[in-house]
Image (cartoon, rainbow, N blue to C red; front, top):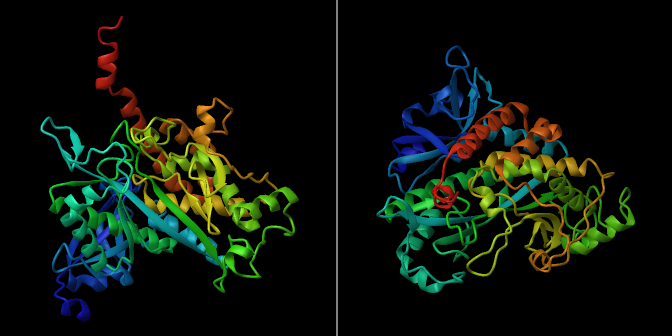
Length: 463
């Protein structure tokens, strides 16, 4: 408290994450910090999406307990320190709190002496309200047919991008790059990887800062997966790698990892791995465990779609659709390939890139489910292992050739898949999944009952 006061801090922003992945919280005077750590900031449980808490009784109150090491000054809220909170109710960790869900998966991994490292790649749109009440790209001059890496847009928006850089740097982000993405109004900001829980916390802080910076410039930071029908959507790719207690790479083959001893397998010559699986792992630069982790992602992919791509709009991105830029990286098919961006899982430099998630996901839940699926794959080496996809799947589609199995076509199908995947639900936490399924089925029903402008234009006078 003395250190915070010396920085001019007078209040703590106690921030938790609701089921939809949205940051919520309240401001509390710094003097109450000991109580915030020991007991937590109190919130009415039923007022928060997805807690499942009752309207009365000892467990009706949601307590967000401050994680002390997360405290840091917010450059866009002078005098305020940001704090990540864990959800509690009745003095116990709340099983419907998504951060608690991820902590349980991380604990399962720690029991094996392993750590999951995650690099998150945020893509997003900068939008603004149009005169007719709709939405449009924030930069009216951002109109190139193929706008990837467009420097003119970056020059026009230099003040905004510099605000992003300065704000994120003040918050301790180790920035790696900022670039214009493949759709008009779309950007990507990359920063250094971290362990799974810290990476999730940092992404939530990134969104909090990005919303504030964009608003300062009269724009909206949008995590909508696909706001423009004829353009690519935004992904939130996870770069995944495991290390053991000695810091050795577990997913990477020895030639990639630079190590001669890795737990759980080393590609070829691994007990329990047949010759074809060993050859596949070697071709992908993976160990046997790396291949099995990928196999777990593919095995549970349909159910994972519900948690990693959790909105109606998510499936406009996850579709083999035409892009105005002529390029699309949408991961439609359940395949694994070496540096192959047309696959759902991409192996690169001895790690895995999980390309399904989009920025509308609850980052804690999506990472927890991803980790649970990967561990399930490692625990079932007897399952058929994936083969390496070495072709451009979009070229294959254009040629009219048979395609690999595809992801669910819509949110309804993904929710059905999650409900049917008892093993994944149990691993992630059935209480959380029940709340998630109930809220998302309501969302699907509301969408299904909505009459859109497209329907009116097509059908009103057609018959």
